[in-house]
Image 1 (cartoon, one colour):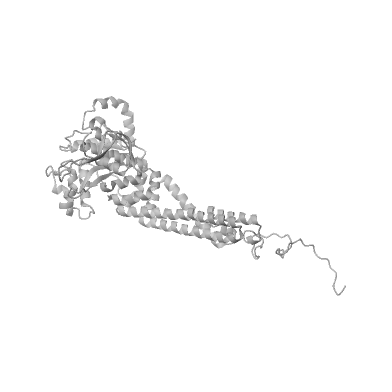
Image 2: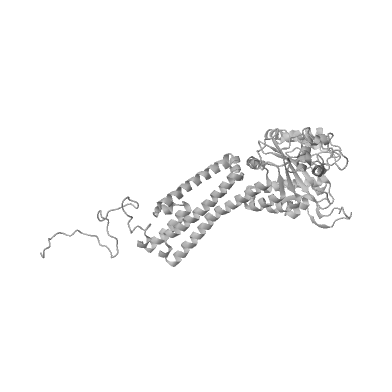
Length: 536
Protein backbone atom coordinates (compact mmCIF):
# COMPACT_ATOMS: atom_id res chain seq x y z
CA UNK A 1 0.00 0.00 0.00
CA UNK A 2 0.82 3.74 -0.05
CA UNK A 3 2.54 3.23 -3.41
CA UNK A 4 5.12 0.72 -2.08
CA UNK A 5 5.54 -2.80 -3.23
CA UNK A 6 5.70 -5.40 -0.55
CA UNK A 7 9.00 -7.49 -0.37
CA UNK A 8 10.78 -9.52 2.22
CA UNK A 9 13.77 -7.90 4.02
CA UNK A 10 16.93 -10.04 4.30
CA UNK A 11 18.07 -11.19 7.75
CA UNK A 12 21.01 -9.05 8.91
CA UNK A 13 23.37 -9.85 11.73
CA UNK A 14 23.20 -7.77 14.86
CA UNK A 15 25.76 -4.93 14.83
CA UNK A 16 26.61 -2.52 17.49
CA UNK A 17 26.54 1.15 16.66
CA UNK A 18 29.76 2.21 15.01
CA UNK A 19 30.61 -1.25 13.67
CA UNK A 20 31.99 -1.29 10.13
CA UNK A 21 29.59 -2.50 7.43
CA UNK A 22 29.90 -6.02 6.13
CA UNK A 23 31.87 -6.56 2.95
CA UNK A 24 29.98 -6.15 -0.32
CA UNK A 25 30.27 -9.82 -1.13
CA UNK A 26 27.93 -10.75 1.65
CA UNK A 27 27.73 -11.16 5.39
CA UNK A 28 30.18 -13.52 6.96
CA UNK A 29 32.65 -13.28 4.03
CA UNK A 30 36.29 -13.74 5.02
CA UNK A 31 39.02 -11.77 3.34
CA UNK A 32 42.80 -12.07 3.78
CA UNK A 33 44.80 -9.15 5.16
CA UNK A 34 46.39 -8.34 1.82
CA UNK A 35 43.69 -9.54 -0.65
CA UNK A 36 44.18 -7.60 -3.88
CA UNK A 37 41.65 -5.04 -4.89
CA UNK A 38 40.10 -4.52 -1.50
CA UNK A 39 41.12 -2.44 1.49
CA UNK A 40 41.93 -4.22 4.75
CA UNK A 41 39.13 -4.67 7.27
CA UNK A 42 39.04 -1.81 9.74
CA UNK A 43 38.56 -4.37 12.50
CA UNK A 44 41.95 -6.04 11.79
CA UNK A 45 43.83 -5.50 15.11
CA UNK A 46 47.27 -5.69 13.49
CA UNK A 47 46.67 -2.69 11.26
CA UNK A 48 43.90 -0.92 13.11
CA UNK A 49 44.47 -1.32 16.85
CA UNK A 50 41.97 1.47 17.57
CA UNK A 51 39.16 -1.05 16.92
CA UNK A 52 40.71 -3.75 19.13
CA UNK A 53 40.15 -4.43 22.79
CA UNK A 54 42.56 -3.44 25.52
CA UNK A 55 44.13 -6.90 25.90
CA UNK A 56 44.49 -7.29 22.13
CA UNK A 57 46.35 -3.98 21.94
CA UNK A 58 48.79 -5.10 24.66
CA UNK A 59 49.42 -8.44 22.94
CA UNK A 60 49.88 -6.66 19.63
CA UNK A 61 52.44 -4.24 21.11
CA UNK A 62 54.63 -6.93 22.66
CA UNK A 63 54.31 -9.17 19.59
CA UNK A 64 55.49 -6.43 17.23
CA UNK A 65 58.36 -5.50 19.55
CA UNK A 66 59.50 -9.12 19.93
CA UNK A 67 59.25 -9.62 16.16
CA UNK A 68 61.59 -6.68 15.53
CA UNK A 69 64.04 -8.03 18.10
CA UNK A 70 64.11 -11.60 16.76
CA UNK A 71 63.43 -11.08 13.04
CA UNK A 72 63.95 -7.44 12.08
CA UNK A 73 61.45 -6.36 9.45
CA UNK A 74 58.77 -8.94 10.32
CA UNK A 75 56.73 -6.39 12.33
CA UNK A 76 56.62 -4.05 9.35
CA UNK A 77 55.62 -6.92 7.05
CA UNK A 78 52.62 -8.07 9.10
CA UNK A 79 51.52 -4.53 9.94
CA UNK A 80 51.22 -3.52 6.31
CA UNK A 81 54.55 -1.82 5.54
CA UNK A 82 55.49 -4.55 3.09
CA UNK A 83 58.25 -2.74 1.17
CA UNK A 84 60.16 -1.85 4.36
CA UNK A 85 59.62 -5.30 5.83
CA UNK A 86 60.81 -7.16 2.74
CA UNK A 87 63.93 -4.99 2.42
CA UNK A 88 64.80 -5.59 6.07
CA UNK A 89 64.27 -9.35 5.78
CA UNK A 90 66.60 -9.49 2.78
CA UNK A 91 69.29 -7.80 4.87
CA UNK A 92 68.65 -10.27 7.72
CA UNK A 93 69.09 -13.24 5.38
CA UNK A 94 72.32 -11.76 3.99
CA UNK A 95 73.68 -11.14 7.52
CA UNK A 96 72.90 -14.69 8.64
CA UNK A 97 74.62 -16.05 5.54
CA UNK A 98 77.71 -13.96 6.30
CA UNK A 99 77.71 -15.09 9.95
CA UNK A 100 77.42 -18.73 8.89
CA UNK A 101 80.32 -18.29 6.47
CA UNK A 102 82.38 -16.61 9.22
CA UNK A 103 81.60 -19.45 11.63
CA UNK A 104 82.66 -22.07 9.10
CA UNK A 105 85.87 -20.13 8.48
CA UNK A 106 86.56 -19.87 12.23
CA UNK A 107 86.13 -23.63 12.62
CA UNK A 108 87.88 -24.82 9.46
CA UNK A 109 90.26 -22.12 8.20
CA UNK A 110 90.73 -18.95 10.27
CA UNK A 111 93.23 -17.22 8.01
CA UNK A 112 90.69 -15.65 5.57
CA UNK A 113 88.48 -14.49 8.46
CA UNK A 114 91.37 -12.79 10.29
CA UNK A 115 92.55 -11.26 7.01
CA UNK A 116 89.10 -9.74 6.40
CA UNK A 117 89.02 -8.29 9.92
CA UNK A 118 92.56 -6.88 9.84
CA UNK A 119 93.04 -5.79 6.23
CA UNK A 120 92.75 -2.01 5.96
CA UNK A 121 90.19 -2.10 3.13
CA UNK A 122 87.99 -5.04 4.13
CA UNK A 123 87.97 -4.11 7.81
CA UNK A 124 86.75 -0.62 6.89
CA UNK A 125 83.94 -2.21 4.86
CA UNK A 126 82.99 -4.41 7.84
CA UNK A 127 82.99 -1.36 10.15
CA UNK A 128 80.73 0.52 7.74
CA UNK A 129 78.46 -2.52 7.52
CA UNK A 130 78.17 -2.76 11.31
CA UNK A 131 77.37 0.93 11.60
CA UNK A 132 74.75 0.60 8.87
CA UNK A 133 73.17 -2.40 10.58
CA UNK A 134 73.11 -0.54 13.90
CA UNK A 135 71.37 2.47 12.31
CA UNK A 136 68.94 0.28 10.38
CA UNK A 137 67.95 -1.78 13.42
CA UNK A 138 67.43 1.38 15.48
CA UNK A 139 65.18 2.75 12.71
CA UNK A 140 63.13 -0.46 12.67
CA UNK A 141 62.58 -0.25 16.43
CA UNK A 142 61.51 3.40 16.12
CA UNK A 143 59.14 2.46 13.29
CA UNK A 144 57.79 -0.45 15.31
CA UNK A 145 57.05 1.87 18.22
CA UNK A 146 55.13 4.10 15.80
CA UNK A 147 53.17 1.08 14.51
CA UNK A 148 52.37 0.06 18.09
CA UNK A 149 50.76 3.50 18.66
CA UNK A 150 51.60 3.88 22.34
CA UNK A 151 48.81 6.46 22.76
CA UNK A 152 46.25 3.63 22.56
CA UNK A 153 47.84 1.79 25.48
CA UNK A 154 47.24 2.25 29.17
CA UNK A 155 49.87 4.53 30.81
CA UNK A 156 51.69 1.70 32.63
CA UNK A 157 51.83 -0.47 29.53
CA UNK A 158 52.89 2.51 27.42
CA UNK A 159 55.85 3.20 29.72
CA UNK A 160 56.84 -0.47 29.81
CA UNK A 161 56.75 -0.78 26.00
CA UNK A 162 58.73 2.44 25.53
CA UNK A 163 61.40 1.39 28.04
CA UNK A 164 61.61 -2.07 26.47
CA UNK A 165 62.11 -0.47 23.05
CA UNK A 166 64.90 1.75 24.35
CA UNK A 167 66.57 -1.24 26.05
CA UNK A 168 66.31 -3.30 22.87
CA UNK A 169 67.93 -0.49 20.86
CA UNK A 170 70.79 -0.24 23.37
CA UNK A 171 71.40 -4.00 23.28
CA UNK A 172 71.14 -4.49 19.52
CA UNK A 173 72.22 -1.28 17.84
CA UNK A 174 74.48 -0.41 20.78
CA UNK A 175 76.14 -3.82 20.57
CA UNK A 176 76.72 -3.46 16.85
CA UNK A 177 78.09 0.05 17.32
CA UNK A 178 80.46 -1.14 20.08
CA UNK A 179 81.65 -3.98 17.83
CA UNK A 180 82.35 -1.46 15.08
CA UNK A 181 84.33 0.66 17.55
CA UNK A 182 86.44 -2.29 18.73
CA UNK A 183 87.13 -3.30 15.15
CA UNK A 184 88.17 0.29 14.44
CA UNK A 185 90.57 0.13 17.41
CA UNK A 186 92.00 -3.14 16.08
CA UNK A 187 92.32 -1.66 12.60
CA UNK A 188 94.23 1.30 13.99
CA UNK A 189 96.48 -0.94 16.08
CA UNK A 190 97.31 -3.16 13.11
CA UNK A 191 98.07 -0.10 11.01
CA UNK A 192 100.25 1.49 13.71
CA UNK A 193 102.17 -1.62 14.80
CA UNK A 194 102.50 -3.89 11.79
CA UNK A 195 104.27 -3.26 8.52
CA UNK A 196 102.91 -3.44 5.01
CA UNK A 197 103.81 -5.93 2.33
CA UNK A 198 103.14 -9.58 1.60
CA UNK A 199 103.34 -12.39 4.17
CA UNK A 200 106.59 -14.37 4.42
CA UNK A 201 106.95 -18.12 4.23
CA UNK A 202 108.48 -20.42 6.87
CA UNK A 203 112.13 -21.40 6.56
CA UNK A 204 112.94 -25.09 7.04
CA UNK A 205 109.40 -25.51 8.33
CA UNK A 206 109.68 -22.80 11.01
CA UNK A 207 108.95 -19.13 11.56
CA UNK A 208 111.83 -17.44 13.40
CA UNK A 209 111.09 -14.06 14.98
CA UNK A 210 113.68 -12.00 16.87
CA UNK A 211 112.07 -10.61 20.02
CA UNK A 212 113.92 -7.75 21.70
CA UNK A 213 113.26 -5.83 24.88
CA UNK A 214 114.41 -2.28 24.19
CA UNK A 215 116.08 -0.34 27.02
CA UNK A 216 116.84 3.38 26.66
CA UNK A 217 117.65 4.33 30.25
CA UNK A 218 119.03 7.78 31.01
CA UNK A 219 122.44 6.31 31.88
CA UNK A 220 122.84 4.82 28.39
CA UNK A 221 123.79 6.32 25.06
CA UNK A 222 120.98 5.41 22.68
CA UNK A 223 118.69 2.42 22.81
CA UNK A 224 120.11 -1.04 23.53
CA UNK A 225 118.15 -4.28 23.47
CA UNK A 226 118.24 -5.44 27.08
CA UNK A 227 116.97 -8.92 26.25
CA UNK A 228 117.02 -10.87 23.00
CA UNK A 229 115.29 -14.11 22.11
CA UNK A 230 114.58 -15.91 18.87
CA UNK A 231 111.03 -17.25 18.99
CA UNK A 232 111.04 -20.29 16.69
CA UNK A 233 107.60 -21.66 15.78
CA UNK A 234 106.93 -24.90 13.93
CA UNK A 235 104.69 -23.91 11.02
CA UNK A 236 102.69 -27.15 11.16
CA UNK A 237 102.12 -27.83 14.86
CA UNK A 238 102.71 -24.44 16.48
CA UNK A 239 105.30 -25.92 18.87
CA UNK A 240 107.45 -23.00 19.98
CA UNK A 241 110.94 -22.62 21.42
CA UNK A 242 112.29 -19.42 22.96
CA UNK A 243 116.06 -19.25 22.31
CA UNK A 244 117.73 -16.66 24.55
CA UNK A 245 120.74 -14.79 23.18
CA UNK A 246 122.79 -13.35 26.08
CA UNK A 247 123.33 -9.62 25.78
CA UNK A 248 127.08 -10.14 26.48
CA UNK A 249 127.51 -12.63 23.62
CA UNK A 250 130.70 -11.75 21.72
CA UNK A 251 131.99 -12.17 18.17
CA UNK A 252 128.48 -12.44 16.72
CA UNK A 253 128.92 -13.60 13.10
CA UNK A 254 126.99 -12.22 10.13
CA UNK A 255 125.75 -14.25 7.15
CA UNK A 256 127.52 -13.58 3.87
CA UNK A 257 124.50 -11.78 2.44
CA UNK A 258 124.50 -9.23 5.27
CA UNK A 259 125.98 -5.77 4.56
CA UNK A 260 127.72 -6.05 7.96
CA UNK A 261 129.68 -9.07 6.76
CA UNK A 262 132.00 -6.70 4.89
CA UNK A 263 132.37 -4.38 7.91
CA UNK A 264 132.92 -7.23 10.41
CA UNK A 265 134.07 -10.25 8.35
CA UNK A 266 135.27 -12.03 11.52
CA UNK A 267 132.16 -11.16 13.48
CA UNK A 268 131.35 -8.29 15.81
CA UNK A 269 134.82 -8.39 17.42
CA UNK A 270 135.96 -4.84 18.10
CA UNK A 271 136.82 -5.60 21.74
CA UNK A 272 134.98 -5.85 25.04
CA UNK A 273 132.55 -3.16 23.91
CA UNK A 274 131.35 -5.32 21.02
CA UNK A 275 128.87 -7.42 22.95
CA UNK A 276 125.67 -8.33 21.18
CA UNK A 277 123.39 -5.67 22.61
CA UNK A 278 125.83 -2.91 21.59
CA UNK A 279 125.33 -3.74 17.92
CA UNK A 280 122.00 -1.93 17.72
CA UNK A 281 123.52 1.39 18.81
CA UNK A 282 126.67 0.88 16.71
CA UNK A 283 124.71 0.39 13.49
CA UNK A 284 122.16 3.11 14.25
CA UNK A 285 124.98 5.60 14.94
CA UNK A 286 127.72 4.56 12.50
CA UNK A 287 126.36 2.26 9.76
CA UNK A 288 122.72 3.19 9.13
CA UNK A 289 123.54 3.71 5.43
CA UNK A 290 124.10 -0.03 5.09
CA UNK A 291 120.32 -0.52 5.44
CA UNK A 292 118.93 2.33 3.29
CA UNK A 293 115.44 0.85 2.93
CA UNK A 294 115.01 -0.18 6.57
CA UNK A 295 112.75 1.76 8.92
CA UNK A 296 115.03 0.67 11.78
CA UNK A 297 118.62 -0.13 10.65
CA UNK A 298 119.60 -1.22 14.17
CA UNK A 299 116.84 -3.83 14.27
CA UNK A 300 117.81 -5.13 10.82
CA UNK A 301 121.39 -5.50 12.01
CA UNK A 302 120.21 -7.45 15.07
CA UNK A 303 118.28 -9.78 12.77
CA UNK A 304 121.44 -10.42 10.76
CA UNK A 305 123.40 -11.14 13.94
CA UNK A 306 120.70 -13.52 15.24
CA UNK A 307 120.75 -15.30 11.88
CA UNK A 308 124.52 -15.71 12.04
CA UNK A 309 124.36 -16.98 15.64
CA UNK A 310 121.54 -19.50 15.19
CA UNK A 311 122.21 -20.56 11.60
CA UNK A 312 118.49 -20.04 10.95
CA UNK A 313 116.80 -17.47 8.72
CA UNK A 314 115.23 -14.72 10.84
CA UNK A 315 112.18 -13.52 8.96
CA UNK A 316 111.08 -10.68 11.23
CA UNK A 317 111.62 -8.87 14.51
CA UNK A 318 109.48 -7.39 17.27
CA UNK A 319 110.83 -4.74 19.64
CA UNK A 320 109.10 -4.34 23.01
CA UNK A 321 109.78 -1.01 24.71
CA UNK A 322 110.54 -2.00 28.30
CA UNK A 323 109.46 1.43 29.51
CA UNK A 324 105.93 0.56 28.36
CA UNK A 325 106.11 -3.10 29.33
CA UNK A 326 104.30 -2.35 32.58
CA UNK A 327 101.28 -1.01 30.71
CA UNK A 328 101.07 -4.09 28.50
CA UNK A 329 101.05 -6.49 31.48
CA UNK A 330 98.44 -4.39 33.26
CA UNK A 331 96.31 -4.60 30.11
CA UNK A 332 96.57 -8.40 30.39
CA UNK A 333 95.34 -8.25 33.96
CA UNK A 334 98.75 -9.20 35.37
CA UNK A 335 100.72 -12.45 35.21
CA UNK A 336 101.11 -15.34 37.64
CA UNK A 337 104.60 -16.76 38.29
CA UNK A 338 105.96 -19.29 40.79
CA UNK A 339 108.98 -17.41 42.16
CA UNK A 340 111.94 -19.52 43.26
CA UNK A 341 113.95 -16.97 45.26
CA UNK A 342 113.61 -13.44 46.59
CA UNK A 343 114.08 -10.76 43.93
CA UNK A 344 114.62 -7.12 44.96
CA UNK A 345 112.65 -4.18 43.58
CA UNK A 346 115.33 -1.57 43.03
CA UNK A 347 119.00 -2.03 43.81
CA UNK A 348 121.93 -2.07 41.43
CA UNK A 349 124.49 0.70 41.06
CA UNK A 350 124.00 4.27 39.95
CA UNK A 351 126.46 4.60 37.05
CA UNK A 352 126.66 8.36 37.49
CA UNK A 353 127.65 8.32 41.19
CA UNK A 354 128.89 4.77 41.68
CA UNK A 355 126.66 4.45 44.75
CA UNK A 356 124.20 1.61 45.31
CA UNK A 357 120.57 2.32 44.50
CA UNK A 358 117.88 1.97 47.14
CA UNK A 359 115.92 -1.29 47.39
CA UNK A 360 112.22 -0.43 47.65
CA UNK A 361 110.86 -3.89 48.34
CA UNK A 362 111.07 -7.60 47.57
CA UNK A 363 109.25 -10.10 45.41
CA UNK A 364 108.91 -13.07 47.72
CA UNK A 365 109.18 -16.78 46.78
CA UNK A 366 106.03 -18.73 45.95
CA UNK A 367 103.14 -18.26 43.54
CA UNK A 368 102.73 -14.52 42.94
CA UNK A 369 100.20 -12.71 40.79
CA UNK A 370 102.12 -9.65 39.60
CA UNK A 371 100.86 -6.39 38.18
CA UNK A 372 102.81 -4.56 35.49
CA UNK A 373 105.09 -2.72 37.91
CA UNK A 374 106.06 -5.86 39.83
CA UNK A 375 106.46 -8.06 36.73
CA UNK A 376 108.66 -5.46 35.05
CA UNK A 377 110.95 -5.35 38.06
CA UNK A 378 110.94 -9.15 38.21
CA UNK A 379 112.12 -9.32 34.59
CA UNK A 380 114.75 -6.58 34.90
CA UNK A 381 116.11 -6.65 38.47
CA UNK A 382 119.93 -6.96 38.53
CA UNK A 383 120.65 -6.88 42.25
CA UNK A 384 122.17 -10.18 43.42
CA UNK A 385 121.63 -11.78 40.01
CA UNK A 386 123.67 -12.92 37.06
CA UNK A 387 122.66 -12.09 33.50
CA UNK A 388 121.51 -15.70 33.18
CA UNK A 389 119.24 -15.40 36.20
CA UNK A 390 117.64 -12.34 34.58
CA UNK A 391 117.26 -14.17 31.27
CA UNK A 392 115.57 -17.09 33.04
CA UNK A 393 113.16 -14.70 34.78
CA UNK A 394 112.43 -12.96 31.48
CA UNK A 395 111.61 -16.32 29.88
CA UNK A 396 109.18 -17.01 32.74
CA UNK A 397 107.49 -13.64 32.18
CA UNK A 398 107.23 -14.39 28.44
CA UNK A 399 105.66 -17.79 29.13
CA UNK A 400 103.25 -16.29 31.67
CA UNK A 401 102.15 -13.62 29.19
CA UNK A 402 101.54 -16.22 26.48
CA UNK A 403 99.45 -18.23 28.93
CA UNK A 404 97.40 -15.15 29.82
CA UNK A 405 96.71 -14.41 26.15
CA UNK A 406 93.66 -16.67 25.94
CA UNK A 407 90.64 -15.75 23.76
CA UNK A 408 88.45 -14.83 26.74
CA UNK A 409 91.09 -12.50 28.18
CA UNK A 410 91.79 -10.91 24.80
CA UNK A 411 88.10 -10.20 24.18
CA UNK A 412 87.54 -8.86 27.71
CA UNK A 413 90.60 -6.58 27.59
CA UNK A 414 90.80 -6.00 23.87
CA UNK A 415 90.77 -2.21 23.91
CA UNK A 416 93.47 -1.96 26.60
CA UNK A 417 95.68 -4.50 24.83
CA UNK A 418 95.32 -2.80 21.46
CA UNK A 419 96.04 0.66 22.84
CA UNK A 420 99.05 -0.48 24.89
CA UNK A 421 100.38 -2.50 21.97
CA UNK A 422 100.66 0.55 19.74
CA UNK A 423 102.83 2.25 22.37
CA UNK A 424 104.94 -0.76 23.34
CA UNK A 425 105.58 -2.84 20.24
CA UNK A 426 107.22 -2.09 16.92
CA UNK A 427 107.76 -4.77 14.33
CA UNK A 428 108.37 -5.46 10.66
CA UNK A 429 105.88 -8.35 10.61
CA UNK A 430 103.43 -7.48 7.80
CA UNK A 431 99.80 -7.07 8.75
CA UNK A 432 98.92 -9.57 6.03
CA UNK A 433 100.72 -12.22 8.12
CA UNK A 434 98.25 -11.93 11.00
CA UNK A 435 95.72 -14.40 9.63
CA UNK A 436 98.19 -17.27 9.58
CA UNK A 437 99.84 -16.23 12.85
CA UNK A 438 96.57 -16.11 14.81
CA UNK A 439 95.78 -19.64 13.69
CA UNK A 440 99.33 -20.71 14.60
CA UNK A 441 99.12 -19.00 18.01
CA UNK A 442 96.04 -21.03 18.91
CA UNK A 443 97.94 -24.20 18.05
CA UNK A 444 100.95 -23.03 20.08
CA UNK A 445 98.82 -22.69 23.22
CA UNK A 446 98.28 -26.45 23.16
CA UNK A 447 101.99 -27.02 23.89
CA UNK A 448 104.49 -25.96 26.51
CA UNK A 449 106.87 -23.17 25.53
CA UNK A 450 110.29 -24.77 25.03
CA UNK A 451 113.35 -22.90 26.31
CA UNK A 452 116.97 -22.81 25.24
CA UNK A 453 119.86 -20.34 25.44
CA UNK A 454 123.37 -19.66 24.12
CA UNK A 455 124.67 -19.65 27.69
CA UNK A 456 123.95 -21.00 31.16
CA UNK A 457 122.22 -23.17 32.18
CA UNK A 458 122.81 -24.94 28.86
CA UNK A 459 126.51 -24.04 28.46
CA UNK A 460 129.46 -23.10 30.60
CA UNK A 461 129.39 -19.47 31.90
CA UNK A 462 132.39 -18.72 29.69
CA UNK A 463 130.47 -19.66 26.55
CA UNK A 464 129.16 -16.12 25.73
CA UNK A 465 132.73 -14.78 25.89
CA UNK A 466 134.26 -17.63 23.87
CA UNK A 467 131.33 -18.97 21.90
CA UNK A 468 131.49 -22.05 19.70
CA UNK A 469 128.79 -21.15 17.19
CA UNK A 470 129.12 -24.37 15.20
CA UNK A 471 128.45 -26.37 18.37
CA UNK A 472 125.55 -24.13 19.36
CA UNK A 473 123.93 -24.40 15.93
CA UNK A 474 124.23 -28.19 15.94
CA UNK A 475 122.68 -28.37 19.41
CA UNK A 476 119.93 -25.93 18.44
CA UNK A 477 119.06 -28.05 15.40
CA UNK A 478 118.43 -31.01 17.72
CA UNK A 479 116.37 -28.87 20.10
CA UNK A 480 114.19 -27.58 17.25
CA UNK A 481 113.81 -31.07 15.83
CA UNK A 482 112.20 -32.09 19.12
CA UNK A 483 109.86 -29.10 18.81
CA UNK A 484 107.88 -30.79 16.02
CA UNK A 485 105.10 -33.36 16.25
CA UNK A 486 107.36 -36.12 14.96
CA UNK A 487 110.27 -35.10 17.18
CA UNK A 488 108.03 -34.86 20.24
CA UNK A 489 106.65 -38.35 19.62
CA UNK A 490 110.14 -39.78 19.29
CA UNK A 491 111.28 -37.94 22.43
CA UNK A 492 108.30 -39.29 24.36
CA UNK A 493 109.03 -42.84 23.19
CA UNK A 494 112.67 -42.51 24.28
CA UNK A 495 111.94 -40.70 27.55
CA UNK A 496 112.09 -43.81 29.73
CA UNK A 497 115.38 -44.94 28.24
CA UNK A 498 116.98 -41.49 28.31
CA UNK A 499 115.95 -40.56 31.87
CA UNK A 500 118.93 -42.28 33.58
CA UNK A 501 121.34 -40.86 31.02
CA UNK A 502 119.99 -37.35 31.56
CA UNK A 503 120.42 -37.70 35.29
CA UNK A 504 124.00 -38.86 34.91
CA UNK A 505 124.86 -36.18 32.35
CA UNK A 506 123.35 -33.30 34.29
CA UNK A 507 126.71 -31.54 34.41
CA UNK A 508 127.56 -32.13 30.76
CA UNK A 509 127.22 -28.89 28.84
CA UNK A 510 126.95 -28.03 25.17
CA UNK A 511 124.48 -30.78 24.33
CA UNK A 512 120.81 -30.47 23.53
CA UNK A 513 120.18 -33.69 25.42
CA UNK A 514 120.85 -31.95 28.74
CA UNK A 515 117.58 -29.99 28.71
CA UNK A 516 115.36 -30.84 25.74
CA UNK A 517 113.06 -28.14 24.43
CA UNK A 518 110.05 -30.16 25.57
CA UNK A 519 110.93 -29.47 29.23
CA UNK A 520 109.41 -26.14 30.35
CA UNK A 521 111.30 -25.88 33.66
CA UNK A 522 114.98 -24.95 33.83
CA UNK A 523 117.32 -27.06 36.01
CA UNK A 524 117.60 -25.25 39.32
CA UNK A 525 121.20 -26.32 39.98
CA UNK A 526 122.40 -24.22 37.02
CA UNK A 527 120.89 -20.97 38.33
CA UNK A 528 120.90 -19.11 41.64
CA UNK A 529 117.58 -19.00 43.53
CA UNK A 530 117.20 -15.47 42.14
CA UNK A 531 116.69 -16.93 38.66
CA UNK A 532 114.59 -20.03 39.32
CA UNK A 533 110.92 -19.76 38.41
CA UNK A 534 108.09 -21.47 36.59
CA UNK A 535 104.60 -20.70 35.32
CA UNK A 536 101.87 -22.51 37.30
